[in-house]
Length: 362
Image (cartoon, rainbow, N blue to C red):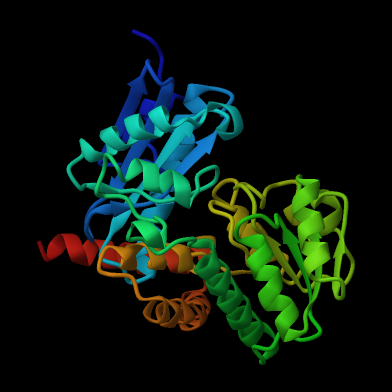
């Protein structure tokens, strides 16, 4: 028998990062679709999470990402106060060359086959127009355009929630939620990051940005000719002198054994999912005196928006819910202090308690 001790099955069934209820491997040869749908928990309700379209190097890497992202969604939805569990899907491929209408329709049929256990939405590599296509085959699709009964771009409220998390971090660390005059580094100024820069500049923060896409950087610099500068890459950004806040807003794993020791910022608060590369990084941050606002707490504005879409979308109602991320973040910092643990562990405890109580009440 093959040794799978270090493989996907070990992660799924025997590791602390596992515990998923269901993982579905999807393939449609006609369209070229290869996808993974992972449901971590439905304790609080149907699993809700986006669809990532990404050119993974291997199928194993894709499955691992789906598992990690789905688990993160369980915690995010719990901390956001939503009646949804956590799920995530990944489509293997380059969205610039492999995405077709036929592929998205095939994907929609697979999501529909789960009968509502999983509700999908946008993520990296997928957009509102894509969800409109998926919705033609699957009614459990959010993140659609207003013309098709949806709420539109969820990155607007995602950025707003991260901004509230930053304000809470400033309140906790410096006794004042204002970010005026603070120097904030934003790594990744795509769908969410460029909206975040807008909030920061409106309040009077100085912003330093970077992105692997030159056009994304140029768009932000053109929109904000004052108060925004760019550096070559993330390595340069995290070493920028005088940085008050570092906001990872691209892919996960930004906080790792290489980046944490050289971070100059006093606060980390960003939109990226799964920022902690491995267990223990949260302690490394705490040991360095760096305040970490848990990613799945502060970036929950988007999922708040798409969840509301299922009940008849109201932007003002969603914005009010996303504004509460400020209070939730402060509560996590208070719990971390009282329990003598890092904020990431405190957030996990609160989320796990809600999921356990939900299971017990069934």
